[in-house]
Length: 227
Image (cartoon, rainbow, N blue to C red; front, side):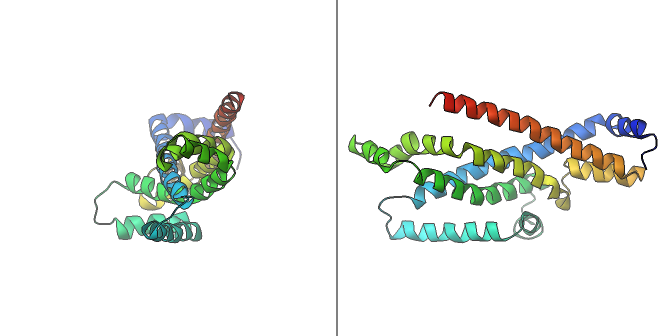
């Protein structure tokens, strides 16, 4: 099984480097853009949920968001992905990678909304009241006072979310997107060698997560050193 391991390992890396780089790029693209979309969705949900004077319309919107979060958190991402690709967006003619980004963005938004809501609730309410006291609207108070502090508190959890997204993208091959996992599956199918390609796959994910972890720790140090 491990005979001539070094040559087999090098062959996987060197035979199609452009193909591997493109597949890694697809993995990062889906995870990073999905994260940004999710963060925007999560911010909107969290801010609306803690509005001090919710009217009837806002309560209805919050109820809709509650259902959305429940659905996203109660079903596997691969099911959501397949439902979008073969069902809800089947006639949209969107590229598969765009559908994957949408699926991961909405899935991530549901999880991060709870993270941000908890971070916002941990902030002293007096700061919000101080913003209103100087004439700021609720939206301005949320944008300039509440959200920046909430993001700072939530950095570790948000970092965990983006790491999870990178690993969860392994399922996008179900809708024909060639990410790094799908690329290795294709290499296995063409070489009949499963061990080395999948070891390379594990190494790629390991390196990506380690690099991202280092970046996140540096970001945390920078943010908290200026607090």
